[in-house]
Image (tube, rainbow, N blue to C red):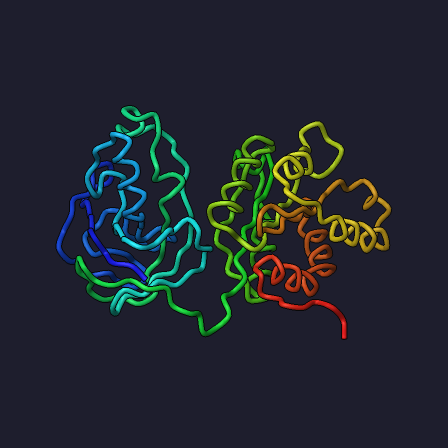
Length: 311
């Protein structure tokens, strides 16, 4: 339970947000009149008042809104809450969608202090139910009454595809298959075969968005630019080799070339990452192998399974 100490908005991006007494939050949009509202997952940003106060004690001397936050709330350590947490403030219902953010260019606060708390302490949410809120309103976490759909991302690795020289058919096919099975595909990316870039996005999607599943396609062969498995292993916290082994075993019944596939399957945080081959047909055959089995594993990663022992 907490209390809203400040509501901050800015009508143009790039300008510091300023406090207002009250605001109207529109469902699937954000704060009416705020430049960062829109049909995306970062509709409203939140920051704990205690985090701001602690930073100010170090000499920062920043006012509410200086970090670009929309809502300053007392009584919540937002970073400790998982993505998917529901927050109720009067008629408004928010769902947390991301923890922290990438800092592409250092702000004035960082230049002064050598640090900024928003990239690691700020969180983002989308508006599920709209309404008006005011400074002083109470905010509480709300129990979820229906299961949260599995959240996934699909990443295609292809130099030619990223340059527009080849149509990406595998990525859309994977997205379609996931959505047909009830997944919400949060992001679909088309990247060059750049291991550093892939590592950055895998970390972002697993750490900040806390997705349940990331499927990559491409870059798993013997070519000199096929570095998807190495990039995936570099960000892994734990190995989950059985999935990749099952894919290769099943694929060997179709083609002997399956033994040349180097895809891996790993866990980072609470996110399962699986490398798929580059062709749409091979992707679908691979998904046939694991799609029915992985929900149990993802539920364990979400801490939603109390006892997985066979009776």
